[in-house]
Image (cartoon, rainbow, N blue to C red):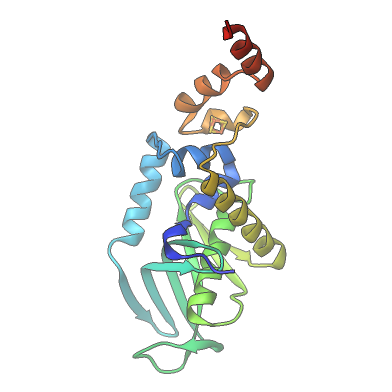
Length: 221
Ligand code: SF4
């Protein structure tokens, strides 16, 4: 199956979805966004990495910043912070360059490595877009760079991660099609959520389906 362009979702949304499905829906379906210190710092780090599209060559390596990527089979589009192209026989030709080059996305994050797979899923999704766009076969690994530790971590792009990306995107498309914001149980993660002031009062205020039906029945004259 292929998605038409008008149904493409924002690739970066997969990390919101992995963190909390409700947060993803509030941001990407309801267009609610609350900027706090964390998100502002993250945005500035990204703006610096993306700004503007540029390319440089360092020996057997080509560095491209701010590459736009998309996938019709996943129905997503977004921007890669950095894509490194390494000289390799397993790679693909690049217009204007000699030899073959294997792409490897590198994503910049403000904080430190997370316990969840959110960043790895976003990165894997970028690699899957590149594979589809460049017809380059499987990209075996990608990298995450964390501002707080100032270190890169290699991420193997295995089948389990790829299956999770496909599954999440299919769920995101289904929710988006229905314009449905799911209710979830508040967890400890809510304390770090940039949307907690918008979300939690509404979540607590909303009663159960049984309460709703009772209320409506009481209104019947
Ligand atoms: S406050 Fe909690 S439930 Fe609400 S969007 Fe954030 S993480 Fe999700």
